[in-house]
Length: 167
Image 1: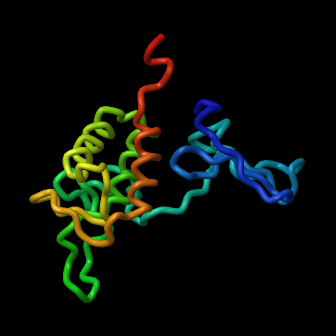
Image 2 (image 1 turned 90 degrees about the vertical axis):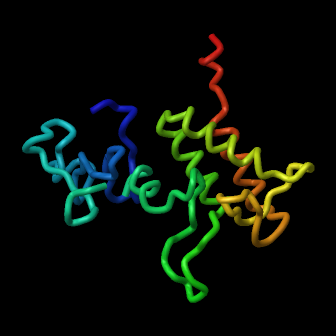
């Protein structure tokens, strides 16, 4: 386990090191100078850790979200009937979240290919709505949608080539 794969959480009373899965791999309680309660950082097999997740041991990853909410490369907000039926359109802001998540995972080609989908549905002025119908590229919902544009900016920065890619 590399140091860059850990995050520190705490409240000035107790603290813990958390890995990329969200599992606590090191924590001393009830004080910083107490014996460690979770020590998987030093001994993955017997050190102990704590994680909250599904009972079957699976993890709510980007791939799991894609499997559940992907709609022809776009991401739906949800798939359940909301009283108006199941959503037939994709939600722009969720799609931009997906681009950011893929970029964080280093899956830049996937992230950029989703941004290419977005470029195809923009108006001539570059405006976006709240939703899009992936089957025909028609925009739905509030138009223009400020949150969609903010999402696009964040997604574009996340998926942009890194300076190190040019060196």
